[in-house]
Image 1 (cartoon, rainbow, N blue to C red):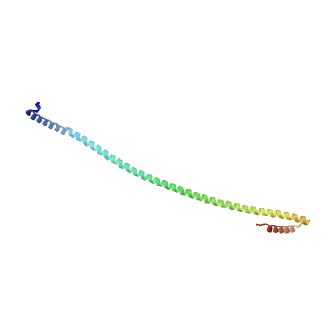
Image 2: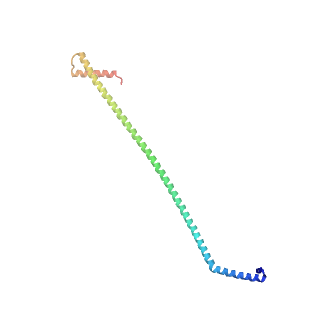
Length: 168
C-alpha cells in the first residue's frame, strides 16, 4: 500500500492538514456564522416560547384563582340567599299561624256570642210562650178574661216560679 510508505505518508498528512485548515477556514468564515445565527435564532424562539408559556401559565393560574374566588363568593351569596329565604318563609309561617290563631279566636268569640245570643233569644221565646200558656191556663181556671195588669202580674209570677225550678 503506497499511502503507508514513509515519503507518501508525510506529504499526505501535510495536504490533509492544509485541506482541513482551508475547509475549517471556509466553514468558519461562511458556514459557521449562518449555522450559529440559525442556532441562536432557534434558541431565542425556544426561549420566547418558554417565556410566553410561562406567562400563559401564570395568567391561567391568576384566572383560576379569580374564578375560584368568584365561585366562593357566589356560593356564599347563594347560602345567604337561601338562609334569607328560609328566615322569610319561617317568618311568613309564624305570621300566618298568628293570623290564623287570631282569626280562629275571633270566629270562636263570634260563635260564643252568637250562641249566647241564640240562648237568650230561645229563653225569651220560651218565656213568652210560657207566659201565653200560663195566661191561657189562668183564663180557663178563672173563667173570665183578665185585664192587662192581671196578665202582667200572673206572667211575672209564672216566670219567677219557672226560673226557680230550672237549673242554670
